Amino acid sequence: MRVLVAGAGIGGLCLAHGLLRAGVDVRVLEREDDPHSRYQGFRIVLNGPGLTALRACLPERLHPLLAAVTGPMAGERRVVDAQLREVRRLGAVDEGTATDRHVLRRLLLAGLGDRVEFGKAVVGYTERADGTVEARFGDGGSAIGDLLVGADGVGSAVRRQLLPEAEVVTVPGNSVLGRTPLTERFAALVPGFGTVVAGAGVSMLLGRMEFRRPPRLAAEELAPDIRLPDTASYLRWVVMLPGLAPAEPKDWAGIRGDLLALLDGWHPDLVDLVRGADVVNSSALTVRYAKPVPHWGGTRRVTLLGDAIHPMPPSGGQGANTALRDAELLSRSLAAVQRGEAELPAAVEEYERRMLDHGFAAVAESLERLPDFTPAR
Ligand SMILES: Cc1cc2nc3c(=O)[nH]c(=O)nc-3n(C[C@H](O)[C@H](O)[C@H](O)COP(=O)(O)OP(=O)(O)OC[C@H]3O[C@@H](n4cnc5c(N)ncnc54)[C@H](O)[C@@H]3O)c2cc1C
Image (cartoon, rainbow, N blue to C red; front, side, top):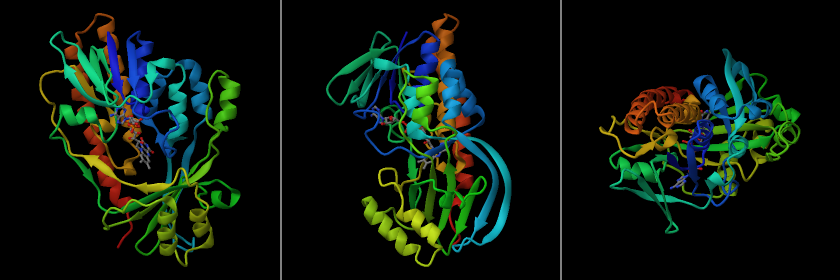
């Protein structure tokens, strides 16, 4: 059995590892030209079934490296005002482990070699009379497999063809996502799990991405055949501004200028945090989510996972966790097919029904938590 995966993101790569473990032939087709070609280094909190799924798919020899390039996600949640005076405490939590998307993606690429092909944008597919599927690329090429998995993120080309009526909604409002190197001064802003700065009409969410070990050095020591990026610990911050139209596309200098004007009079540590942001990994943030879709009935040689089918606001911290859960579930279903214990169409349909259930439950939960992230007007 050969599986084609559109998209070498968190979910697609996790699936590829799960399939290789099960002895299934897999080819991952990624639109980007290389693993570094766009902004993508934000903090991701992994927990519960998502983390378990990742560990189940990732080769065991990489588990110590995964642990080394994560950071703690526990402690008190505080709300402060724009002068950093504590307003209230929200209680302590322990929510799993933090990692950086770019670092995690590089870790997930380890051991996949030329099974991952960059510069291959999947633009559509054809289900063939012999029961196979042909994925077509933007460069005119194509590939044939027994199953095509659209793991191609929120703008999924595979979803657009399979479910043209599926709706993805953009949440009104402007958000900005930034990250600033973690110095002692900025670390003091987040003594526990996280800090919410509640300003007048603007909130700022602060959280640490503090790697247990610097990723590049950890890889050199624990898995010398793997190169991880030289990413230093950082403080990630999100500024939410409700009720405005989505921002005009602007470069970072423009966005930062607008933000600094809004933060006029705020505590100098917060102003300097924005001033000192890493230009490459800070940007405007568009928040989108999918409306629930029922199972499409019947089984096809094409399926979906992760943000390609159930994108959700980052407020629930569940998008990547759910993509990982999908990936592990699908790889387990396909492993049974590979062993001759199940038929492909039935295995895919069972996966889809379970994935739709837990995926859209996570979307609903993330939407419920969205107001916690937006300031009172
Ligand atoms: C600021 C922020 C914070 C977040 N925090 C968390 C968190 O704490 N916890 C959590 O669980 N989730 C979090 N998320 C959500 C999480 O990042 C996503 O849900 C997750 O990355 C989805 O994984 P995916 O593999 O489905 O899609 P992606 O990771 O988006 O990967 C899709 C891949 O497909 C490629 N692609 C796109 N189109 C094509 C095409 N036509 N052909 C081939 N390849 C294509 C893309 O280049 C990309 O590599 C956060 C998101 C944001 C924006």
